[in-house]
Length: 407
Image (tube, rainbow, N blue to C red):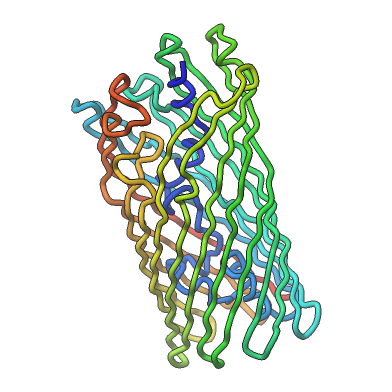
């Protein structure tokens, strides 16, 4: 019966977003402007308030009251082939989704700026056919999240700005699978939680043309509370559950340089400390203590990006970028919910300055993921009693759009 809980561990439902874009389950698409450069220089750019998600200290560059509002349409293409070495295939595993974002900044005085951010840092939907060969490993997974971040930044010198914010984050998750222990009955797990983390940032402006930024988002310890339900008449299954889930800390370093009146260059490095996502203790109300311990064994990952922008004329700016995103899960730890692999980002974008107050940003990204293999026999979490083998091909198309308005 313990394997039933392993198959429905809440950690796996939160991890399926890696199929869509960023390694692990972090949605990086929080700024259409930064997306156009593949997020190169996101911690140093500060072109509009949306960059505060990556570095809150950049708010000091925004005068008066400003607002950025936008959304991202994420359209993944994920397919599983050669399932259990047969002609069986699964198409459209990851479903498209829209992720809104917005940031408001208010200049309190010459040195201090306040801000408020609204973001969807995690979220995706995956769905296999109910009778596929790996249905006891996972059928449907849904994640919805919302984060509200009050922020403040201050210029401590003419060149140095510091900032901080509190992240109030709500996550709601649901997953389903079939259970061998219950005669292939469907099992559903759902739960939610609201917890608090923080972000810190610093920006150093070497001169009018060059600046550097560092951003840090804290690890956040989520405690999911919910229920496990099934049509099977078992008190072990139909009960309240809880699970502790650590969201990793992220450290970002960025650089921006204006080469001349036409060209801007930028670079970014991010370290995501996924090793904190080592295991999940799963607790049921009707069973005392830990009823299952799932070892995820994720690793810390690196993200590298280079970008450039070209000022076409007084109204139009073109953006370009390329990035490498390292997978958080090695082959030996992959599951059908987590067919993670390294990926390359190719991005382009446009900025249109309608007038002194209103501007628009548009971006498009194509992500090509390295082909991945899931072999549950290699993964000690599942073992040979419930084998599944599949070869995955994943890619993503992402469209971003936002408007910026200065009051």
